[in-house]
Length: 386
Image 1 (cartoon, rainbow, N blue to C red):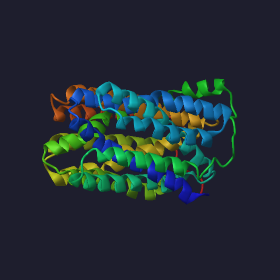
Image 2: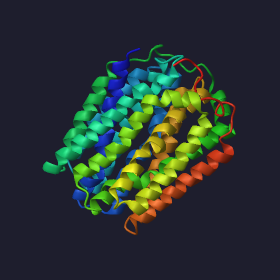
Image 3: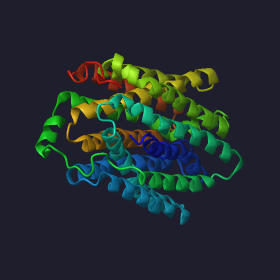
Image 4: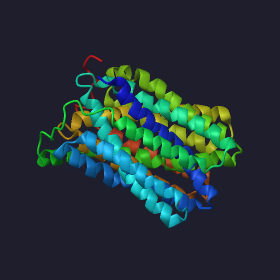
């Protein structure tokens, strides 16, 4: 198994995310955009996840060449993002963001399938590879925060370009283990999978959970800046959440072996609701905020690990499209809806936005409690030796 080559891709990909998510809104704010415009520009990145991963996942499952698709996506992401150096008006940036994210968002879901192809029989080890993405996020969010404290915010664009190049180079170093295989089952079998009530519930849960992250991913840095936190302090708080995620991923194979997927999902959603309430009402208390950030291990880490296993079990023969649907309906549709809604409401009250986020997580919990029921999800999450 090419552990370090797989891990290197995740490191670069999530280092870019750690550069983009905390600081992109601050860059847009420096250009004079309103809260609503910032929400829309942030939502566009997520909205392309609705279409791009599904289109590219369908191509990969039906025609093969998954590794080539990943490389093309990474390369054209670099080309499209270079448009930010030409102009900075709203509509131009909107076009650039749509083009860049259409390619960038296509690669992760397919790379997850490549990773699973190298883990046959040892799926609990996915989190040990994925943990390097979390480490990359931490390195980026701390390093970029420190850098931007003493350098102009425009340097953010140079750092993003460099990391996009790193993703492309990393994509050249690894291929799918079993070569260019087409999906073993017919399209009709995919429709049967999608009609299963537990699968529909899973996608609805993922949508509402990611919608609840809208105020966090779009305005958390601005929220903290308004409370007089420095950019480096903002970077530390972002990184704390991902450090907790790293620690969880290191031992996640044991959690998956000890608890059912359904129970992991329920605990993840309940703790997500608590996290947003703490951020809403106790942002001025650093100790409480530190604890809330540590709950990122639940609101993202444990839920994502359980989701990968749900998709692996449910979408036999269609894992590329299963990953793409998960990405599109959660990070794409849910994330875009959360960003747009928080952009509309942010000027009214940041506290209100995070309270609504807690409500969205509670909706996800309710759906999971009533409808996430299947023999595949109610047994120990992994049974094979890992």
